[in-house]
Length: 264
Ligand SMILES: NC(=O)c1ccc[n+]([C@@H]2O[C@H](COP(=O)([O-])OP(=O)(O)OC[C@H]3O[C@@H](n4cnc5c(N)ncnc54)[C@H](O)[C@@H]3O)[C@@H](O)[C@H]2O)c1
Image: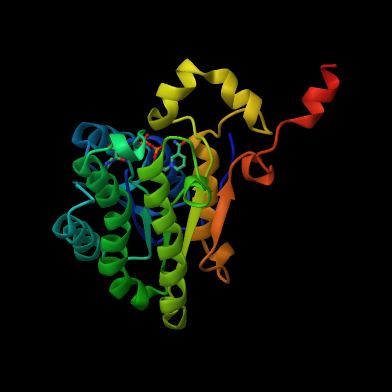
């Protein structure tokens, strides 16, 4: 059993997309480090199950079923945290959706939903959290993706949305650095969560073949990076896009010469 430091005692932290995957792992890690949590997700049942688990383990947890694509719902989520605890220290804007499809095949509705859930949510979170983070010297961690830094085959909407999150993170960081508010993002590669399971179950060998570390990340490995950025250990880091990808983006994308020559 790992003994974590207690970096978030007395800190109030909102996590979106907390019912599953990276958000759930982040909530568990933050709770283990003493944070009071306000968790949000569209999935009310999953959220209630998470809250039960964490409360039984002794954590302070409140929940709000929230569609992060709706500004009034995000505003109400932040208000819940501040009303309950009188402060807000960290927002983890993590909820997001993927969408596979080529430009000619995507409907306007599908396009707008990806932008709303992945981009608008991050903006609404920042808009409503920053006034409170000014008071606490708090920070935001956005879940971006390596898909926000480079192109993926078949992911035009997701690439566009995560590219926007990457550059929004940079803008927010410089606008609010003078106020003592830090804004960073994590950029995971493939992570073993329900979002990626459909792919991992069908083509596991593609992950082994193309990722230098030969496996997807576990959600805990992304949660560790998020909690680092949210903690005082990262007190001079802002506007940073922390890549956590098992080495994928260290490669040029050229063929694997080593494997080619060895197979001769
Ligand atoms: N899994 C990966 O390979 C991977 C890689 C890079 C980045 N990411 C990003 O990580 C974040 C978390 O994804 P995950 O892999 O944990 O996926 P996941 O599907 O396991 O979890 C996402 C959670 O977000 C919630 N959610 C979806 N739409 C919502 C909405 N409108 N309002 C509130 N909650 C909503 C879902 O109900 C779910 O609980 C996303 O932003 C995703 O883009 C994932």
